[in-house]
Image (cartoon, rainbow, N blue to C red; front, side, top):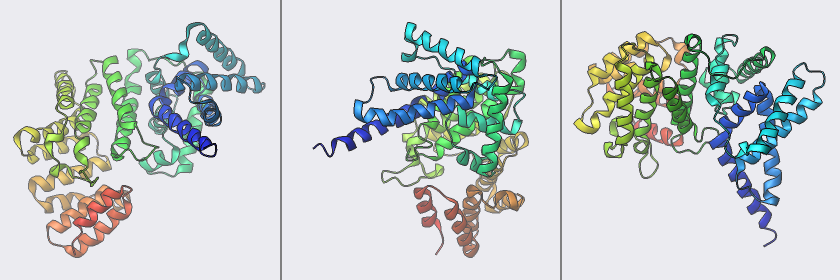
Length: 418
């Protein structure tokens, strides 16, 4: 028995630390950063706190409030780092801010229920002095905890280049001493687009891990929905914030239908609509209705409108593909990203036939799509539909090789022509 107890303690401690990271990483970093005005320092301090937890909790037991324990440990790490950094110009300010916050915690019990500062951190990351190319990646790392490698893959760049970009952005925040506040309304246009894009990208990353098996992405979809709701509440007269909320809610409503009982991947057109969550769809439709009433159309409203048309299949039993194709045309005019263009081709294939979809795919630059899995999956499907089995097999092979999800790979293998 004594031989197994430490292993059990290690397991419990690791599970508790993972739960705390999934539930509170962004809130912890945002809270610490807002006090120290040093994002990198806050991340380092929190990393120290998690290491300390994994060393301490197995022997002493998991604390009743793990997040409060981590916050206290991270704050102490910030104070220690500030004391050591005697040559840094900002060391005194960091030390004073952290020490003041430690005193507030002792007096008021703030660590038990620390405020949510994530929106402030998102807007700081979108400040005009930050390189525009770094804003969304910076938010994904600091607020949502994604590593530089995964962010680099999403932005089609190397992990090294992305890591350097993020380091420079964090240093810029510290050197400029930016205040962690929600900006005044006149300053929003320069920042809001990047904030919305980060929440959108975070949801997409979490959406890809439908089984929740990847600890690097666990909980991301839920956190992105939480942030979308916070943004919509903060700026209820901003139609794009409402459009983003409607989009993520419509997608989330279908989560249960994306896997069969055996874990197999289920394509949208084949999903059991009785598994779609009607309350989330209703909430999405209400947000989209409010956005439409403001008369300022944008990308995220268009994305939500497309999902709204798909949702109608739950009531009508059919998808209005011409409407989906038309909406994709409008979306491509607003935001001609690789994902949008591939989705547009899929919609036109359904509305007007496989050759129409292939024509749109053929028009996309080969260097852009060569490693984009959805492109090859769609191309393979359309080639099989027109009877070009040899070309379809080749495209399916590329799509399978680019797929990270085993269930998706199996789905594509089943579709591959003999």
